[in-house]
Every structure is written in C-alpha cells, then in structure tokens.
Image 1 (cartoon, one colour):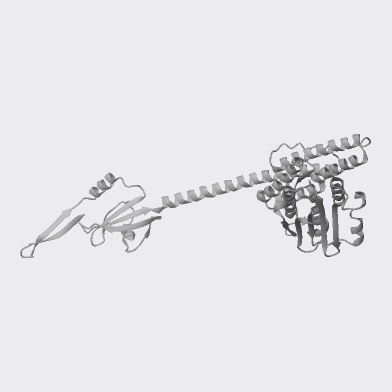
Image 2: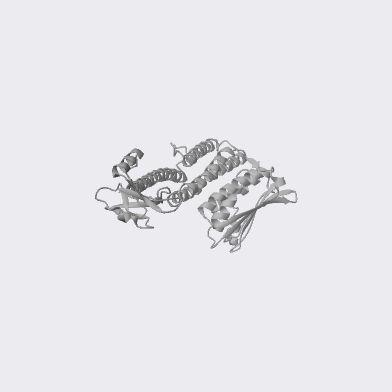
Length: 403
C-alpha cells in the first residue's frame, strides 16, 4: 500500500516530481493492537478516492459494502454493524468504524427476558400473598360470623378467642367482652330478680337491654357479612375502613358504661354507627345534622339514640324505594332539650303508631319502647318519646329531656 503526492516548485509553481510512500499493512495492524480495540469494533481505512487501504473485518470479508455513502447500518457476513465515518484532516484519509450490534442486541434480549421474568415472579408473589391474606381474612370473618350467629341464638357462653391482633381480631375480642358482660348481667338479674323491688328491677332490666342492644347480634352479623363481601370484591382499603368503624363502635360500647353521657359524645357515637350502615347500604340514604353546640355538654341517657336511628334506617328507609334522608337535630324547646330524629321513609299506619310505645313484647319496635321507658324511669313521667308518622311520608321521633 502506497500514498503519493505531487511536488511543486514554490517559486515557479512548476511540477518537479512525485513523492510516494509505501506502507505495509502490518503497520496498521500493530497500531490497532496497541490501541486495544474491543472485539465488537472493526475499522476500515480508506484513501481519498474511497478505496479500502486496511480493515479488521477478517480475511473473507468485503469492506466495499461498508463504504457506501450515507449508510448507517451494514450487514456483512451475517453480522449487522453500526457504521460511522470520519475524515482525517491531515492526510485526507477516511476512517470507517463498524460496531457489531449482535452483542448489544443479545444483551438487550437478555435484559428483557430477565425483566420479564422478574415481573412474572413479582406478580406471582403478589398474587400468592393476596390470596393468603384474603383466605386468612375470610377465615377470620367466617369465625366471627359463626360466633355472632351463636350469640344471636342466645348461646351467651360462646367465645371467639381471636388469635390475630388485626381489626377483625379486635372486633372478636370486643364481642367476647360484651358477651361476658351480658352473661354476667343476665346471671345477676336472674339471681336478684326476686329480691329487688319493682322499680329497681325495671331499671336493671333496662340497663340489660341497653347493654344487649350495644352488641345487637343481627347488626354485627349483617355488617360482617358486608365485610366478607367487600373482602372478595374490593380489597384491603375498604375492608379496613369498615372494620375500623365497627371496632370504634365496639370500643365505645365497652367504654361507655355510665347511665348518662354528654350530648356531643352520643351524637359522635351515632355518626360512626350511621357510617357503618352507609357501608352496608351504599347510596341508600344521607344523614344531615343540626344541633346547638352550646348543648354539647348537656347530659343525656347513654345509647338512647341508637335504637331510634336503627328503627329509622331498618324500618323507615330500608323498605323505601330510591334515595332517603335521615335528619338529626337537637335544640332547646321551652325549658327542655328536644332531640329529633326524622326520616322520609315508608312511615307507619295509625294502628302501628298506636302500639309503638306499648309493652316491648307486643311490637317489632322494641328499642323505641325501651328508650321511652328508660327516659321516664330516669327523669320522670313528663319526659319520653313522641312519635309522628304517616304512610309514605316518613316518621319523626322527638325525645324530650330535661336540661
């Protein structure tokens, strides 16, 4: 291989001869070896006319394809190369660099396969953990449901004895504690009934019914049934919210042991109670509230609103077709506290309304009769419930209490 240049006289600018320099290909090979070029990089050195002077493609390779102008990719001997070209300014020689893409493509394929494998493994792990979590949750919910069903049948010696400390476990523990307290109270009532005078005996029975209504096995059973369905349909977040509300109710039932409490505390309890029913019957009704904040510390009977609100939801708004409204209001009326619970449900006929506050054993609205009698026992005959209702127009229950 040789490189030649014309020689001119600078004074006369006449050609005086030609200088030719011969280079052995081994010289370029030695330079390439000293540079330590990577295996995937090949070089082609061309003269100014575009003919290959030296290349590292291999003995059988034809570098002509790589020398085509404006060609970015070159296929040579079954191998695909990325082609880049540059001109050496001092000599006018052209240097063509060929990068073997097969290694990069192979690395990309390997990375893609590894990434896909990792994604599949992660998805399988998440699916397995989710299945295990839902299975465990379903098992615990079913156990609680069976226990609540047994309690609703009068088997007060039933104990759930939860092992887990999650929301379901706390609910089960609260149910066990309430069942124990109910069982103890029943035993006390049975032992002392013959020795207590009528008024004290009625007060104790009223306390027993209030405590029993705190647990309300049918309410807990229906709520846990909803939680079980939510566990299968929607996942942890909605379950957690619902169970937290129910756990809050259970804790309130255990902690609120006095006969009276501030009005604000009773309303806060009812807000949580209604929120649980809103999870059970989504979109069926809306709760609105309006009460004088100056009355927050006014003492009222503990749990007296729960049976009234439950009656409005189950017997008023429950059978109603379409969306319903439940309104809670507390205000001063003359020299008394007036608490109003009003719904726009199906209402009641006059015959049912007449029997409503009769003996608790004669109608399905047992809770209203119990609240009415309890208020009168606590504060006197001039206090209690007043109920106004009309079929198809809803029901309004007014509780008259002392200040």
